[in-house]
Length: 134
Image (cartoon, rainbow, N blue to C red):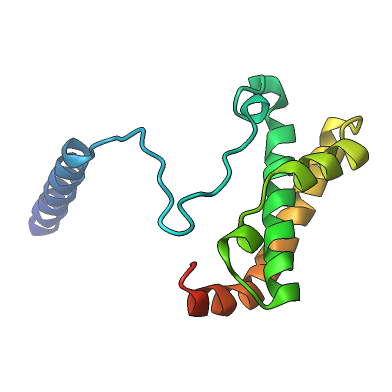
């Protein structure tokens, strides 16, 4: 009986806490980065891509991320233009290699670029931290 009361009490506490946290959440449409505030935005066509083709946008984002981390590591420099260049190179690379690829090939490539970016991130992070851009 006391165990049931204790469990009920915990559920009430956690339920109340979650409810308070939900009510205090203030959504915002502002999307201002903490570092490099002049980051180039994604091309409009990527932002407006059809939901059924959003997997293509994910691949381009991961290509961009991997290229960014690679540039930082190769140059040992994390200034804003190095870390956040225009989207041109990533879009061109996607167009040349993956634009006509099948769905599962794009999904597989997205995973590969995500892995690559995560590996490079370990080396890029200390460089960017030292530059104040992390």
